[in-house]
Structure formats: structure tokens, C-alpha cells
Length: 262
Image (cartoon, rainbow, N blue to C red; front, side, top):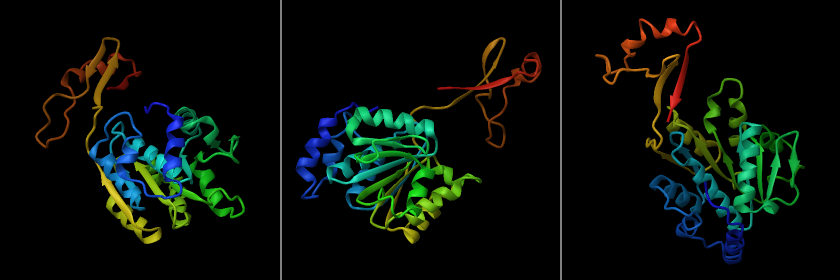
């Protein structure tokens, strides 16, 4: 996680809130580590006033793209909205942002909780709350907004809740930059084209690099066992570890578990 430096925002605002002439390198320096190529590409698109869709595996650093949008929006003296699909995620992000950007700048809206709504320039909220604001023209929350980060955007593929993300894209003001952060999806090119049709110019950024590999294990009374053999089957697909077939599934007494070790 990024180290908290609320005073950095003051410095950015004093230099760029009036001129608006901010460079990619300026946003890069907000982070205490070098950014990866796909993160720099996202920052560049945002500086060029383009919306961004970032599709990359879990743990690859998509959140940095959202944080970069926050730094950019604050530097320009505007508000930023950061949406998540769950109240728990919103609460965690609110806590992180209070340390990173300063408690007085950050607000939280989750339906049953409202913190610092009037004064905050960074508002963390659930996606449904943002959708409802778009229909409530008198709320004023979406005025003077630089960007809206749609975290966990792959929820758009959810059968029950996906329409909420669609409505957010369709009804967001055209001058607001959208930053959609998603795990890998099959149809991201079509989604990018749809973004451009209903909202505006959008850059698609993808990465298949997984810095935290997934390892599949089976847990029983004997401990951890590899779920799959090291060699795939003739079709190139993972092959179940043969040592598990005769004993492990029955030894567990119907209480078998599958764990993911990283």
C-alpha cells in the first residue's frame, strides 16, 4: 500500500489547481515505488482526459491506477468518487484513503453510513449509492467531479447486479473520466467500444502478469496435497492428482476442502 502523505496533495494543488498543466511524471512521483508499464499507460490516458478500463489479474496493481486518478483529480482542485461493490470494501478503502490523502478530505457513503459528505473531495461509496445519485439531480454530489473509479468492474457481468454498473457508465456526465478496474474478462474489447459509444473516448489497458501465482491444494487430515499433477493431460488441461483419487476424497468423510495457497 502507498505510504500516507496528505501534505503531498497540498503541494500538488498549489502548483496545478489553476494551471491544470500536469505531467505524467508528476503523478508517478506521488508513489514511493516505480510504476509498472500498464500503470503508467493508465496515468497517461487520464492526463490526456481519456477514460480508462484496466483489466488485469488480482494482485497486479490495478488499485494504483485508481489512486493515480485520485491524485490527479485533487491536484486539479476537483472531487473524485471511488465506488466499490461492497460496504466492507468501502469501509476499508475509506480507512486507507484517510491515511493516504488526509481524513479531512475523505468521505464515506454506504447507504446507512454518511461521513464528511459535505466537505470531502474524495468520496468512497458503494456503486448502488453512486447510481442513485445520478438519478437525484439535486444531490449535487456529481457536480465538479473529475473522475469516478469503478472498482471491481467485472461485477458488470453479474446476473443480478450488473445493470447497476451499466447505468453508472450510461448516466455519468460526459466530462467525468471513468476508471474501470476489473479482473480479467473475456469481452473487454467490446466493453471498451461500448464505453466509447455511450460515454466518450476510452483507453483499454490489459495485463496478464500475475505477481502472486495461484496454487491449488487439497486439505485433509494428512495435510496439504497438490490438487493437480505437474503434467497436463493429452488435451493440455490440468489433470487431477492420482494420489487423491483412491483415498483422500473418502477419508475426509464428506468434509473435503479446497484451499488456495499463494
